[in-house]
Structures are given as structure tokens and as C-alpha cells.
Length: 223
Image 1 (tube, rainbow, N blue to C red):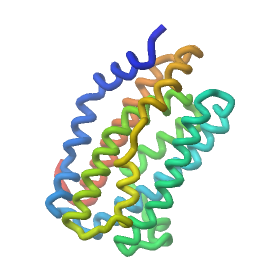
Image 2: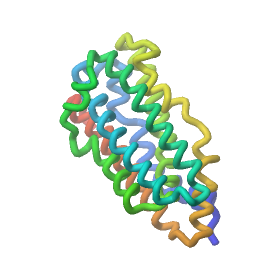
Image 3: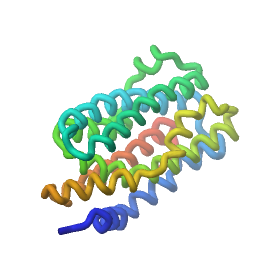
Image 4: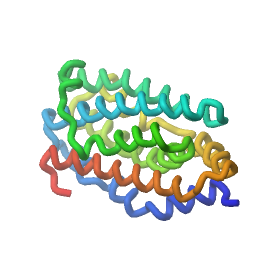
């Protein structure tokens, strides 16, 4: 039987090129040189508002379907993280003079929402381990990019700690592997096909790249 750690290493190896594209994304480079206008940054806030709303409902669905399994703790931690991020987003929005009404009325783009919609699919049809594998793979890149974005906004755009709390919350994330590995192993023991976990990680990583591509297109940055 395949071990969780071996599967995770396979996933990381198989998705290395996509990970590199995310970490070296031109959108982050543009932010670091002050090349994204405040108006364009508002689109990032609006996209995140809609993605978090989707995530809260979707993870709740997974908790409802898998709450009897050992993964309950992992899923509840993810859900609480989503809730904390939604609360922190208000500070980021305030730094851009955006209200709740502005965020809710923002028209989401397909590129910006593909990630959230796949989480919704996992919430309705996927397994706890598919989410764990996908989150584990994406946690490193998302945390790194949020950290870079926070530093750029503080250095170039005059954002303060409160305005960057949303980004710093993700950038400080740790323990993803320790939390996710037992969930993946339990699923493997239950007979969940490892290919489904690899697929979920591949798709979510690709949708994360699509998100950054969408942000770059909105800011008129060539990728």
C-alpha cells in the first residue's frame, strides 16, 4: 500500500514546474516595483472576497460529509482558517478604501474564481484526502506569494500591519504537512485511489496559477 509521504513527494515532483511559475509570477514582480495601481489591487480584494465565501460553504460541506472520520480536526482547522481570513480581509479592503458593499458587488472573473469553484466541487463530491493533498501542495506557494505581496505593499504602497493582516495570516501558515499527512494516510488505508489526490493537487495548483494570471491580466501585466 502506498504511503502518504511517498505520494506527497510524487505530487511535489510532478507539479514542480507549475509551482515555479507561481513563485516567479510577473504579478508579484510588478508589485515589488510598484507597477500595479491601487485601482487594480481592488480587484484582488474583490476576487478574494468571493473565493472566501465559496470556501466557507464548501469546507462546511466537507465537514458535514466527513465529520465522522479522523480528518474532522483537519477540516475544522481549515474552516477556522477560512473564517479568520474573511475577517482579516476587511483590513486589506479598508487600506484600499473599499467597503463590504464594494467587495460584494465586485464582478468576479473566471480566472479569479476557478480556484474557489474547484473547492466547491471538492466540497460536494471530493474526499477529505483530496482536499488535504491539494491544500498541502498549494500551501507553500500561496504562503510565499502572500508574504511577497505583503512586503511589497508595505514597502511600495504604504500599507500598514492591519491592512496586510490578511496576507500575513497566510504567509505565517505552518504545520500543513503535519496536519495533512495523517488525513492522506487514513484515506489510503480506506482504499481511496491516490490518483484522485494527485489529480486534485494538480488541478488546484493549476487554478492557483490561473488566479495569478488573471490578476496580471487585470493589471495589464504581460505573463
